Image (cartoon, rainbow, N blue to C red):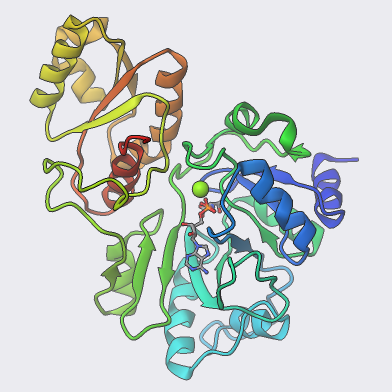
Length: 350
Ligand code: TXA
Ligand code: MG
């Protein structure tokens, strides 16, 4: 039996399958099966009040349809299949634009919950988050199982998300029945979660599709849902405002610029602390004595940094770093998603 056929069978039998998407690896189960969904929460140690994303594919949604039609044929099919509820015409028009532009891809849409989606998936809420991933293995798994697949990132709750199959093994090991290995993921940060149902759409989590791209397609401004610090140099607000998430084991410190990073690196090193640095290639070559430091090179562009960030955090953790230092980035484009993850990874556990 091929890996894919085996994995699809596992989904149909209510077991857990980890699979690659273009963002991070997901921990999947049949979204219509309450027992299977319960296993996801147990395997991750995830609280039941954190809802799951339901992954769908074109194969069982697409019908010959006119690409310009409103509502989008995917919306009609999702509704017919009891996955989503009723939308207003304004919502349909807006969602049609977003789906036409960004599906398959790293945009998760919050939609009214359909009657076939168990409340366990939505944490009791009347909305369901839906995403059509772009990775061929993810799409093939959803198509072969013939089911919508609920999948959070395949990591222990609160930990750094997995971007390789080995990361999934490291975090979840025997708790997963099948792991499909598609190599390292290409985007490296999670999907953007957007609620486009209210008059003014709101980004609930920054991710692979940028705020600027969404505003361009909708031709309107959208809101940021998460609390933000006034500037990246400002101290963290009181604990609790920012949920600790995406966190390495080491203490993660985000410095406003490279000079501040070097100063802190020297101080910690002088105090005998094991420090790891997350650097761009140009930062790594900017100072000769950096070569002697424990460091991980993220690449140069925002795309590189997003793709390599989680692997870098995990590598420095494994190397025994007690502290990980990195420079803040401008919150533009993918920089918003990267800074969001860094900021929440930097919140200390109580
Ligand atoms: O890229 C991704 O989105 C990955 C891959 C596997 O698809 N999945 C992922 O899932 O990151 P997870 O569970 O780690 O994050 C899901 C996010 C959470 O922040 C959750 O609160 C939010 O989506 N979410 C899920 N359902 C929601 C809903 N009905 N309303 C608002 N937010 C929701
Ligand atoms: Mg997650």
